[in-house]
Image 1 (cartoon, rainbow, N blue to C red):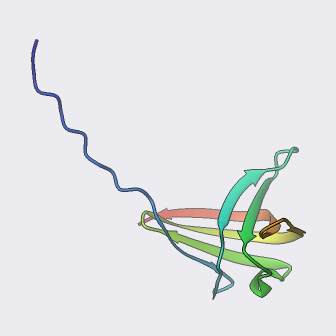
Image 2: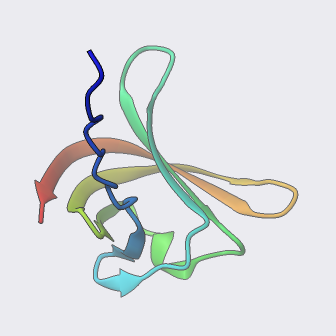
Image 3: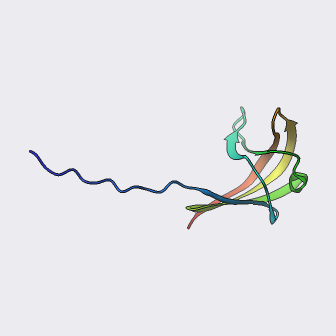
Length: 100
């Protein structure tokens, strides 16, 4: 049968709005939740330069996008100097996601 095809609604992409660490705005290149080889969750934050707000033993992150708000509690593990940026690695101890 010949019929009309339903138009697919365009879903807007989720866009980054802000990232804060203990209430302080962070200029981050990337924010990724991954797992270690042993399966424990970890958080990787890449910044263009050294970020003083990330130099604490425990940090409460809040990531806001156009669709949701993600809160992550994490303990500092290590900081790695890479060629063009600084990589901060944290062990995740609390994770919540709220859709707006």
